[in-house]
Length: 73
Image (cartoon, rainbow, N blue to C red; front, side, top):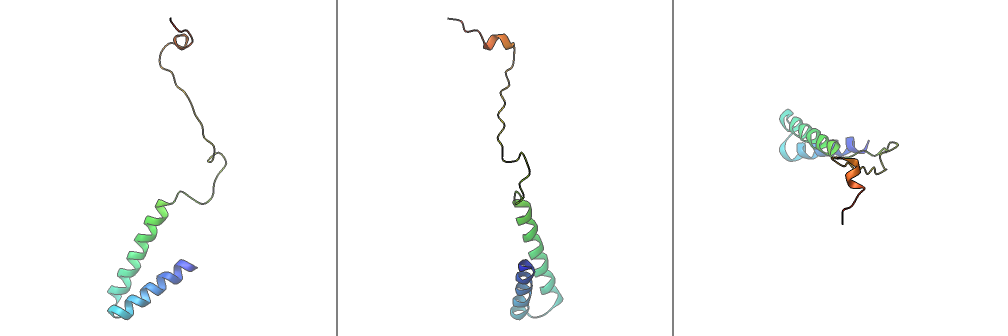
C-alpha cells in the first residue's frame, strides 16, 4: 500500500511542477516501474527457505585418493 501512495505522490508532484499531461504521468510511472524492478531484482528475498542459511563446505581432491594420505619424508 505504501509504494502505491509514494508512486501517486510522485505523479501528483510531477504534474504540479511540469503540468498535467499524459507524457509527464506516463514518464513518471515508467520511471517508478523501472526503479521498482531494479530494486526487486536486487533483493535476495525476505523469506528464507530451509537449507538457505546453512554453509556447505566440500573438498574435492584431484588424483589418487591414496596420495593424500601418505606423506614422504
